[in-house]
Length: 275
Image 1 (cartoon, rainbow, N blue to C red):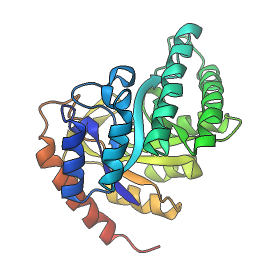
Image 2 (image 1 turned 45 degrees about the vertical axis):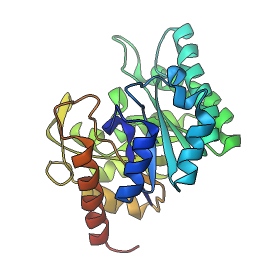
Image 3 (image 1 turned 180 degrees about the vertical axis):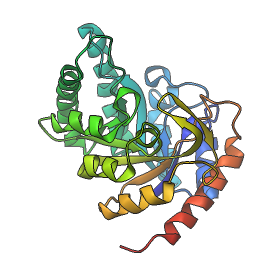
Image 4 (image 1 turned 30 degrees about the vertical axis):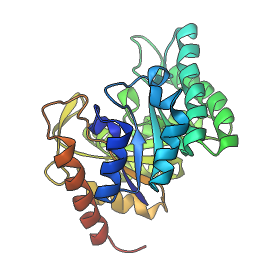
């Protein structure tokens, strides 16, 4: 498996800073969420006019871009807004292809008051079917994250199970289903072969309404058990450290968190039984 970090953990870094840190610390890849304080794919020079240079920097450094994490939310009622969100993903497919990136992360969003979960799942699945059909010929999958009102593996899997066609899967963020009360084994059983990317993090003060990020091994998330169950599925994709520095500016700096994470994660992986 490739070990990576999300640029959400270093929101103000440039491509050059990201590449230098990843190589120096021994990471295999990077999940691109934002660069130099910009999270908007459409206005990020590094992923537009400067895209060839960005791709070359990662390639020349021997680093994989393991995921392109965009802000698109597919579970919106307004048809025009849904088309706009899908357009974000269509653009991301072109960017991911240039970066030789295997997946794009999207959100389901929150269930509007009075809306049916089944109807919302159908709407998201319809959008994913269309987007997966565009992504699959490039070897790319569009992945719904266990997030928002789809935190539980049960609910994320229900959406993906409704998709007709290739190029679709799930990002398993280990924290979110667990803090919402779903047992790890149940999450893995629900998601099964749908898992195309994994976010690893630790936190305290867990509840269905929130959490506080902490360094790996200092929190309440059973990361070792989650990874043990994940390995039993035959998963061979990336493990990406999503250090939410952009949302929690008070937590330790990436210069502290990134080296601590890879040391702690390697220790966990060494402790697991070989498959």
